[in-house]
Structure formats: C-alpha cells, structure tokens
Length: 218
Length: 325
Image (cartoon, rainbow over the protein chains, first blue to last red):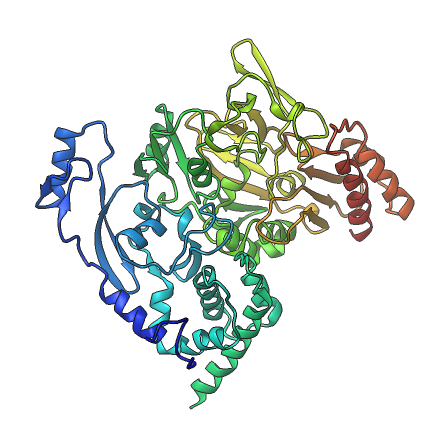
C-alpha cells in the first residue's frame, strides 16, 4: 500500500474526499413534506403546507450551513444534530456516531476554528458558523502529511474513531503548530479508541509535524 | 431525539417568557441536555428547546473594579484559557480546564455546568425507567440500590408537591461548584442576585434554586485574597471525560484567619466542611493539624453500604491539599 492510500480503496484519501465534497447538494433537489410526501416548490410552500395540513407537527427549518467552504441551503427538522445533517443531508460520513452522548469524540468537527462534538450540537443552531469536517481537511494538500503519517504509523485498527482523532489533531496543530507529546495526548484525551491505538497517535502527529515543517521550508 | 420545536432566543426576556410555558427547556452548550433528551430521562418529553446561546453579549470574561465578572455563556475552554481568570482565580481556570473533555469544553458553558442535573444512574436510566423522587416520583432508588457514587451526608428533603416531602441522595458532581463556593461567588439571574450559600439546591428536575423562567446571566467573583491562595483537586477514575467522584476546593486568606473548604460529590449540594474550617481558623498548617482537619471534614458522614470509601477520600484529600496549600 502506498503512502497516499487509505485502507483497501484504490483512490487516495484526498481524491475520495474531493469527490464527496463535490457531491454535496448545495440546495435540496426536491422539497417534499416528510409526513405525506407532497411535493412543494419552495420552503415557504412547505411551511404553509405544514400550517394547514399538519398543525401539530414540528415544521422543518431552512438553514444555510457553511460546510467545508461551501454554503449549503438545507431543509431539515430542528431536532437533528449536526452529525445527522452532515450524514443524511450532505453525505459526509467522516464524522462518526459512536456514543452519541459527547463522550467519545468520534464525531469531532471543527466549528469556527475550535473542535466541537457534532453529536451534541443541533444543526439548526449552526447557521453562520464555519464548519470543517475530516473531508475538508483531507482535500487540503497542507494536511496530506498528517494523513500519510496516520497510515504509516498505523494509528488505527478498525478506523471508526480515526476521523475524530484526525480532526482533533488538526484543531490542535492550527492552534499550536509545534506541540509536545504531552500537549498532543492532552488535546486528544477527549477521543476514545477502543482498539487501543492511543500511543501511536502522538507518534504519527509528531512525525507529521516534522514533515510539514520540512515541506514549508521548500 | 424526538421532534421538538426549536427557538433561537435573541434576548433574555424572550427566552425567559418562552421558558415559562409548559414543556420548554433551555439549552446553552447542550452538554447536559442533549444526552438527557437522547436517553429520554425526563417524565415528559420537552415540547420546545430554547437555544439561549444565540443571546448576544453573555460570554464575556472581564474585571470590573474588584469583581471578576463571567457571563453565563462563557465556555469552559475560554475560562481555562483566559489570562484574567488565570491571574485572579487560578483554581477556577484549573477546574474549568479539567472538566469533561477538550472538545466538549469548547461548547459547554459555565452556566450550564453549575446548573447541571445530577449524574445518579437511577435518575439517568434510559427511558425514565426509574421515576425517582428527583423527577417527581415517590422514592429514591439509590437508598436501597447501588449507591456507590451517592451522598455520604444524607439526602436532601424537598417537596415534590405541596405537602409531599421526598428525599434524594444524588450528589452535585459539578466541577466548578466547589470552586465557586470557596471563592464566594455571586450568581446573577434575570430576577435577582443569589449568594454562593443559597444558589445550589435540590428540587424536581433542578439542581439550583432558580425558578421557572429564571435564567442565570452572570457569575461574579470578588477579587479577594482567597483567590490567590487556593487549591483544587478532583478525584476521578479516568483522567478525561469523567465526572469527579469527589472534588475539593480549598482557599485561605492572607493572614490565615479564615479557611474555606468545600467538597463536591459528597452531598446533594456542595458540602462546606464547617468543622474543619472552625478547627483551622487562625492556625498555621502542620501535618498533625492537617490530619485533624481531614478527620473533622468527614465528621458527621453517614455513608450507605457502598460509599464508605468517600469518607477516607475526604480525610486523605483534605489533609494532602492543606499541606500543599
């Protein structure tokens, strides 16, 4: 397996991520009532339809989310978490749902430059915030060494928690480009890997920091 | 989560009015509320969730004269990083920097932390399996069940309905509660100013004395000499993403005439160790005195069958932290 390949897929991580981001719908293709499947032309029609036909139900909200630099107009029910909207409405499956209680860190995304747990945030509260997911990190060439080192040092086994770790690591390196091993372990202490790869994360990140520093010199 | 209406409140009045309607709950960071909604622990599922994080200008951290003022929406990470807090109330920065996990600290707020509901596993059981006294039910299941993380200073009796008295032995496991107690913080709400001794309470689905529709807006910490000489210690089984089994805050003024000792995780409200404070008053710490103070702090404890270990924890931690003060 080459350095730039992830898992058993034949495409590189950045290509896969770019394809996923390109497939993100900027606006809903059709607006349908989730209860009776009636087709509506605009969101205003849907709101009207709800008021007249389903007055006891909670009407979906229209929210514009800025995900990975793309403004997406979405219509979803207000009880959906950011994690669910990223998966169901935008097709971004990088942020994973493990505990769904904010205790494992697998769903970490970067919101306004800070790591945030997307399972614990309602998507309808995210209007105007800049959201970055693991796909958005993978397409930036600057972060390629981080992903490569994760593969090289085998900082994953089943891989389910890895996107959360990677996003937390990126948030740390944004804030502190040259962290010590202690600082890395501290910043990643909110992420849990049941396979037990914790010691390898700090190693991979330290190696990636070295590579990124070399890259910037050239 | 089940469907609910969602309101992004823009002013305190709007949020307060909306909260007074039945079935409305307030969400700030969501660290306590959303897991509770996912677990469906409430007797009645809320109809409306009011996002108070969208209220502007409530996340400040500033020094005004001789008071450190922290807006209720300031996140724990901001408090832990703030140079103002680090200089004027170091144990608050320390406690905020150790609560929950790094990512969760970026979104959860100080107001939510002090108002959080108890972590009792009967209270938190999925799908409201135990309709306990704290939810308006009839009895406290921890009294006869597994009470290893529960109170050792007895339960608090409160009224679930007029004339109906119930007891609850779940503890207040907030990280910041003991710290704010020893720093003599004042809690400003939309209706009044509450002193540190009166703020924490026990009620149906409530860990504070806040009324329905009352919102905590600010925490004021006097810049006293207590803040400069203080210690915070939390005892947990895991380093991160864990609630303290027991946490302890100690502060002393310059001439050592008055010690403040507060222990969290041992009583339904943060426990002020009055006996130990009286014993220490005006005295210099020696190893013998520290040991006596530890024993005095645990005086009056009535552990249940599974939590006698907390008595030993109090004795040891109080002694250790006094010696390190």
